[in-house]
Length: 235
Image (cartoon, rainbow, N blue to C red; front, top):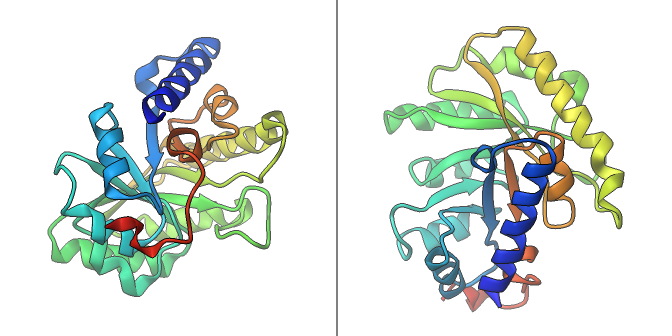
């Protein structure tokens, strides 16, 4: 089932790239593996997946040592400052930075490990009260504040678009995020790059790719419905 799901997702990614005259290599497929057992992640790994996204620090820590070392772990969920130290040496990118204080803590912990952590600024693109992220209006200011931190590197933007029945309804938000990235890039702020756009999930990743996404976060489309009821699922 997983291989079939993954094949369907990959075909859709390739089709969206073709439709938008982009190279397949421009888009990273991140398998969102939250709540999924290690055995299922191993199956995805054996099928060729190397980028996995997790929402919780605890899950990254529990899965990290039990899976191959060439996996690229992405922290895509809300991150509390006091938990940064647990994953700073485990993840390849933190997608969900929405405040200077969080970026500052990432910088502190990255220095301790003598590394530079790539991060994305999380934008609340539809101004939803139930979601994290900085507003579009405050994004440039946040980028300017973070720019002087020398152990983090802003690589682009991330957003969680609204849940919609029709993916086309989110196209406008993807367009807005792309425009914001262009606007920030034009500021030529030191240490701020806008080449990464982490947008698009199971229901709308094809539209996101058409609008410039470089990272799509697909969970249900690959692994099936999530199971929140079994804490032992990590075993």
